[in-house]
Length: 115
Image (tube, rainbow, N blue to C red):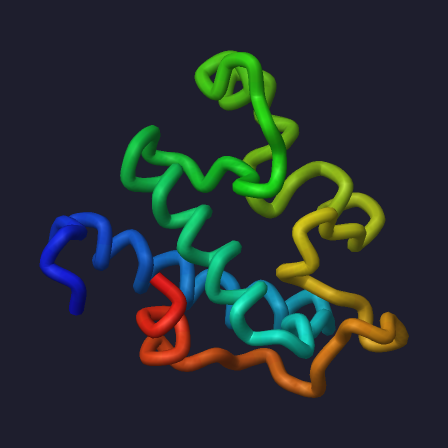
């Protein structure tokens, strides 16, 4: 592990890793062909979870993160993912999408390598 990150952050990272794998299976979606993309998104979710207690979408720029949290639209899984299975971040990819891998798993080691 990298010593610059807190133990609490690594716990959030494990939570978001587990969430992503379970949610991909539940929704019959897959991770991106490029594991570094999946890693960066999971890390971003963990960062927000550590900072605010909720996994705010790391692929959006917000004027006010706290205001966005109040709206509850961009908390992962976001409304567009829950309603239409559309993930802007490409964390959860439809099987017929050219960027979809054939896996719903990613190792923590792969995520750590991309920190």
